[in-house]
Picture 1 (tube, rainbow, N blue to C red):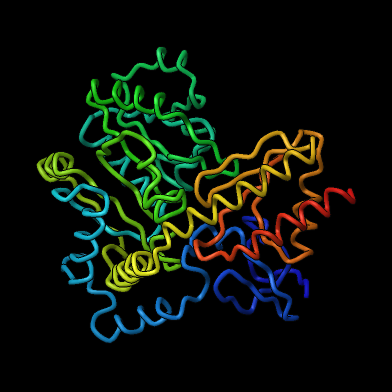
Picture 2: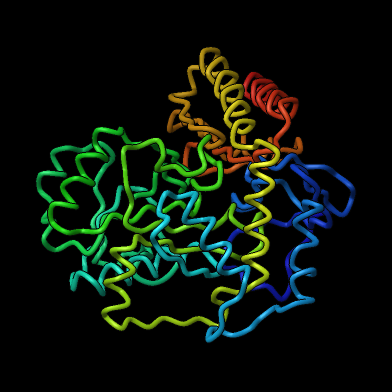
Length: 378
């Protein structure tokens, strides 16, 4: 069933399909049609939709304490901070738990500006930092300096003395899915540190198994000063985090920096994130996601050999993209895949795939087979 959305401000192209149910990697519309979700919602449901265990956690937590306010400490908050810092290798650091990835990135940048007294932010071209605040990628935000991936010439021209932070997204999520070289990022981070410019890792999309490791920065020789987490952290529940090193935490607290949100360190989100981490460990989903990503990449490479319309396949774990020739009708293929029951991502002449870590190999095979059939009949 297709319908015109009513009473909804049209800020984003939501489409007209009414979804009434979801389970694991599948969505179901009002007519019972099934869609295999290769976008994991908005890249959030790393465990799949409506995970039975995760669904019970907020209710269980609400029986104890749901919203204590930001002047109190809760047990879930303490436990999540400790376990997340341990996972990040920042055991002596500190955390704050928020609701969205944009909040987390923006707070990281705010902290960097506070402790450095500088304004400019360096990032890589096509990185998506935040929907709001200092990290928003809008023309009026003149404090963001973007350089092309692996552009060493641009690196030499940067005035690091003016930078409050280098914000690195280890796999651009804005539809393009690019992965810069380890050598380039190492050089950039080293130069930043020489100038006392904090290195912030934006793991909002790449964290929690998306790239075949717990965090995307593990593919690089990096020791972050701050890490922003989100999306998969709550498997669809609004929870995000900013983790900072002990050195950064000391500077922030010495400066008397204050920051408060209505929903900060909320116990339900903390409890959900703890359970998400437990399930990823218990079900060995990092390894499974890595193996599924390997199969996916192999099948897409075979597809690329058959069709000259495909320029390149890019991937790391279950974060993949297929780039087509500029004159190829990617929009038509995207819509045809949706008609055939496959939800994928699209930007310009690229299709993006970031399914749950629980995606079945049979669904990956079905998707690629459908792509081949549609491209042959075009």
